[in-house]
Amino acid sequence: MAIVLIRRFFSVLSKTEQKILWLSLIGIAVSFVFLVGIGLRQSLVRVPTFGGEYSEALIGRAQFINPLFATTDVDRDLVRLTFSGLVKPKETDSGVTFIPDLADQIDLDAAQTLYTIRLKNDLRWQDGQPLTSADVIFTLQAIQNPDWKSPLAASVRGADIKQLDDSTLTIQLQKPYTPFIQALSVGIIPEHLWKNVLPANARLAEYNIKPIGSGPFRFSTITKDPNGLIHSYALERNQYFHSQKPYLDRITVRFYDSAELAIQAVERSEVQGLQVLPKQFRERLTRRPGLRSVLLRLPQSTNVFFNQQLLPALRDERVREALGIAVNRSMLIDVALAGEGEPVISPLLPGMLGYDTSLDSPAFDLERAGKLLDQAGYTLIDAKTYQEGLAKQAAAQTKKGTTPAENPPATETRGPANYRVKAGKALSIAITTAAQPDLTSAAEQIAAWWRDIGVDATVRTVDPKDMQNQVLANREFQALLYGQIFGNDPDPYPFWHSSQVRAPGLNLAQVSDKNIDQLLEQERTVSDNAKRVGLLQQFQQAIIKLKPAIFLYRPTYTYILPTNIHGMEQRQIVKPSDRWNSITQWYTKTKWAFK
Image 1 (tube, rainbow, N blue to C red):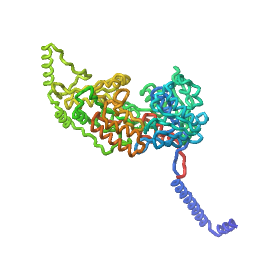
Image 2 (tube, rainbow, N blue to C red; image 1 turned 135 degrees about the vertical axis):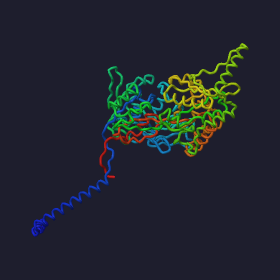
Image 3 (cartoon, rainbow, N blue to C red; image 1 turned 90 degrees about the vertical axis):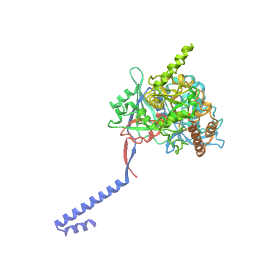
């Protein structure tokens, strides 16, 4: 009927009228489609989807892809991709915190010593076998077992671990210890694969090279070079992963013996990204098309620690203050780090729990530094007068038949234009540091500033591998330029408590103060963050007042990624492997979806 009426309607129209009508109808249809398209476009958005690959150059070789043994950056990188812990680090506006990973819920009793942990449902290993509380207990007890020789043993020492059922366990501590949550981030290993491996032979097991974990990616293939050395690892998405599965199908990591070789691999497009870009190579890659650099902040502070026991002149607070304000942090960062760093003015870093944002940055003031040394009794005399005085003393001692006193050996022959002298003896300080380009540059610049105020400052460099035994173990330094590396939880106890004065303790400035000890002991036992903040701020004020060190800068970590990798939002890391914290969010492919 409708068709008949339409035909009759058109039959009474002229050809011109029919043509106009058809054009009008076509225009209306096109407009309708256009408006619908606009509406859809406003309602749709590009979102990540599954697919794509990523390849990266790692500097070094894989040895132990095992959470219990991993100590190198390369091993930690692969462990982070293939294993999961009870908790995992997450970046927040106030720093890094821990959130559940394999754990579904963690409860702490009123005494703050008993952790009750319930696992998520239906957890599975990458081989499809169930992951239960027995695996967690096996892992933690293996760490405790001295036969396994795990470097993590101290993290769970004294903890009593018990299984309640397949999904629940308890961990009883001997006393409250708030930073213990960090120990629960260790990757869990499968009991069904490791229980028949003798602990003494654990480092020889094939599972260290072909791991099976519960992380977002699983081991796929391995390639070796003609000499039998592992050349690369291919990892693929873990179909049994307990959380959001990663968008990327595959990650390939290739190993190189030096930064130069790794950079060349990126330049040849053999790999897409680079684990770390040393500052001296920055210009080669940061401006290269198709690449982008990501600056990551490390929880590390590089400082000058004073040894008041070895150099009595440093026991005068005015001398320590003078040396501190004779350092220009901003300029030091430019000189030593090519501008890639942030000034540090306290024993805690900006963004850490308890950091006092009201702290004032010490001003660079050579004039005031000189006045403080005047007040400390150090008179400024020109180099010629000082040298003449030394010659007279030597002549007098020779005449008396005594041997002239020797000044400490210096690694630099350049002395100050003027000397600060007290009781006939010059104020002389040697700065000891590791023989690394950034630290050596920083030490030489600091020494130059100290010479500007009349201090006979020299620089002594030590091979990094010898730093522990030759310098730190016996505290053999007058002033030490060295870095402190914090964990995810900013526990300053290892660096400033009097019990850590002797090696292997890390109290390098050898601070022994009852008030500071009490603050640090209390802070470790408090779970209420507001109370911890108060205690940490009191601790900061006490250290700043004491002036046992000069807090200098926090370095950054330059990570190279291709521009087609999206979703990498990490900005603060504890160690290089933490750049993978958001790996499940990385993507290269997108699709349309409704908002």
